Image (tube, rainbow, N blue to C red; front, side):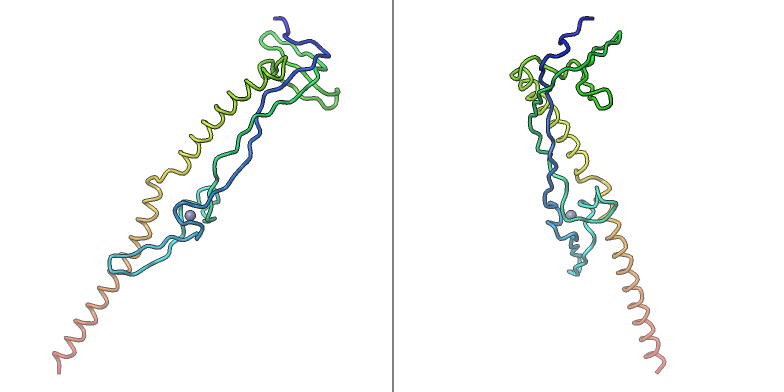
Length: 178
Ligand SMILES: [Zn+2]
């Protein structure tokens, strides 16, 4: 295997910079709570589950947005070549502190590297979109969470009705005794 580049050559590394962004939670709009309106018109606030997903169950009011992924070309100077049977790698830096690069991330010209960056940007954007779609889809666990909160309220409501009836019956009973 012949190395593509030689020691002392200036090469260009194709990469990306990824900037994290946040966006307002589309479910609670930053309020960290969602309001449940019960059948009888009562309103109950419960913690927003949607923006709790990346924060150990603490609603934040915002969620992670898509990464701002930009092309990043870096100029390097090859200091060393590492060859194995399967791959050629290049190093930049001194013996104590050097970085290692695979041959397929380096290019002979700036233009070639920039072209490779465009492909990397598209690839990483797609991966990020997939991850976001997976992480923030409204799924069963979310409806379960709302359902669970509602179930507890329904149970409370049932108890209330039960006690009200009991009181009513008791009242009738007392009245009947008179
Ligand atoms: Zn939220």
